[in-house]
Image 1 (cartoon, rainbow, N blue to C red):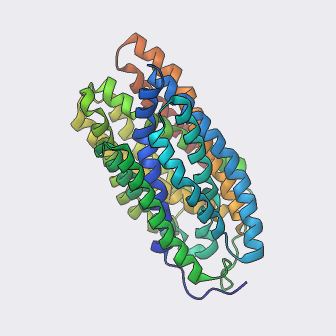
Image 2: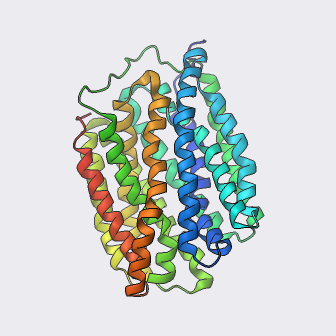
Image 3: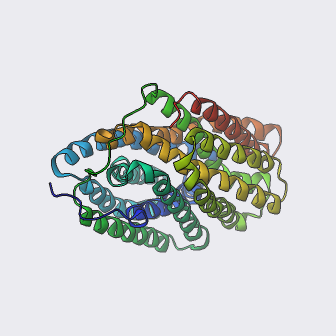
Length: 397
C-alpha cells in the first residue's frame, strides 16, 4: 500500500457526485414519472409508486453489500476505487435501457438494473471524504459534495425537461457520469493510500447511535422524496399547467430548488466546521419547512418558484451539515460499510415515500381536484419536522 502523494482536492474528489446527481436529477424528478405514466396503463401515480419502490428496495440491499466489500478492499489495497469503476460501467447500459424500454415490465427491470449499478458506487464513493479529507476540513468538503449534488440535479433536470429525444437524454446522462468519474478516479489515483497518516482518526461519540442517525436522516429524506416524487403531479394537477408544458415547468421548478441549494451549501460550509452541526442542519430544514408551506398553498407559478428557491437554500445547507455530521460520528475504518447503512436512510425513503403518499394523494384528489399533490407537500413538511426532532438525539459534534 503506497502512501499519499499530496493533499486531496475537494473539487476533484467530489466531482463524481455531480455525475451521479445528473442521472438522478433527470430520472427521479421527471423521467420516471413520465415513463411510468406513458407505459403504466393509465394510472400514472400507481405505476410510478410501483417502479420507484421496487428500485429503491434493490438499492438498499446493494448499498449494504457493496459497502462491506469495499471496506475489505480498502483494508487490503488502501482504496475502494474498483467499486466506482464497476458501478459506473454497468450504469451506462442500464441508462440506455431505461430510456428505450418499450413496456412497463421492461421499465421496471431497467430501473432495477440502474439502481443496483449506481448503488455499487454509493457507499464506497461517499466514504471518500473520510478517506482523504482530515476531520477539520470535512465541512468544506461536504459543501463541495452538496454543491455538486445541486449542480448535477440542475443539469439533469435541464436535459430531461428540454431534450425530447430519449436517446439523446440517455447519451447526455451517460457522458456526464463517465466524465466526472474520470476526474475523480484520476485524482484518487494520485493520492495513494486512503488513510491520512498525519491526521487523528475520528472516534465515534459514545452516545451517538446509528439508529438515531438513520432516523433523523431517513425522516428528512422521506420528506424530500415525497416532494420530489409528486412535484410533476403538483404542477399538472394543482397549478393546472397545460399538459404540453408540464415536463418543462416541473424541470424549471426543481431547477430553481437545486440551483439555490448551491448557495445554501456554500453558506453552510464554514458553520458546519465551526459550530454544532445539529443546529446548522435544524436551522436549514426550518427554512425549508416554511418555504414548503408556501409552496403547498401556491396557486400560481411565480409563487411556487419563489417558495422552491427558498426551500432549496435550506436543503443545500442541510446536505452540507448532514454529510459533515455523518463523517464525524461514523467509524473511519469501516466508513464504506457505515455509509452503506447510512444510505439506507436515502434508499429506503424512496421505497416508503411513494407507497405512503400515493393513497393520501388519491384520497385528497377525490375530495378536490388538485388537492392530492398539496397533501403530499404537507406530508413532506411533517416528515421534515420528525427528522429535525430526531437530530437532537445525537451528540454534539
